[in-house]
Image 1 (spheres, rainbow, N blue to C red):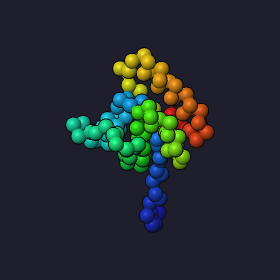
Image 2: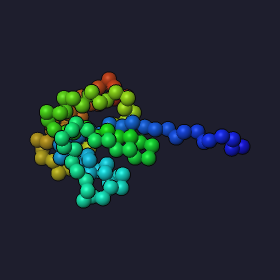
Image 3: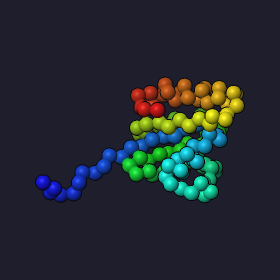
Length: 114
């Protein structure tokens, strides 16, 4: 019946994108059970890494001067989390839409779940 170790659990690599201030880091920190007071924004580097059970999430910084580099981190992703702040201004929502559309059409992401 139970000979040998159990088979390894599947692991999934996700990429998390969204504009700066969309609360990507806060959302994922809370999912990983981090204390809200200790959550720091993704500053000083392009991404943060969150291991969550069998899901590994790379959170990409959302500043406008960084977004053009997002595609460098898409390879190997098996899913995408796009975070949108509901309190964004109308201009920010348009910018988010303009960033989401190319991501949806990117060859490395277009077949992945969003």
